[in-house]
Image (cartoon, rainbow, N blue to C red):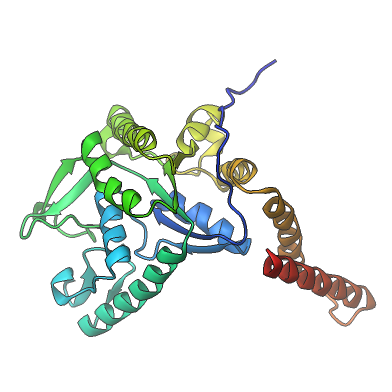
Length: 309
């Protein structure tokens, strides 16, 4: 008896190894996957501009990363006495204009270096909708809860999305571009509107795959919508996937996109993380001293394996 519609995942020509640097850009789902990989000691940088939902903001981040073009005062808006960046999520804010710009440019330099050294660029697209400031036409990464009358809301077309990413892929043929569409539903436009938005993003990625041999697609959206078609896989808001669903999708990503040495090392690091989180009642006991000795030996072997990869 079949109780699930299993998603067929393609055989990928490239595999992630522990020697690869990886950059995650995009929606909350990029944060989820990137954070898991960071915890497992992959060489990842996750959302250096904060969470970005739409293709225009993500491609804008790529432009900054490739050019290292510095942020200026004109890239900042005020909300009362708080300064906020047009190109970052809401946590990038300060009560000092100078502090905000300096911090954003410092992080940009670090992220730009990581991008240049990365073999994998993982992009998670959330929505086709963008918000453009009426005053200067800039597409913002986040509306920062400002008056909606300050923005024009626009829907991107398939071709527009393709045109936004193509120059960066073309200019970086040695990198592998892994696209996903976020399984988090954007319910503002209702069920039909959400499907139209996600379909636009999927069609755009398909066109990029046809155009470029180094573009891959991982079906995170389809896994949650079809393979995990039940509200028990969602968090309380019925929009975001539960932690169990996130872990399930991660396991599929790991099994299909990491090489065999990485899979073995993940097992060791998972065991080590569990041991490191153990809080003994009696740290001076002989049992804990033996346990701690074993943990340190596993730590040594893990570090040696990572070093030799």
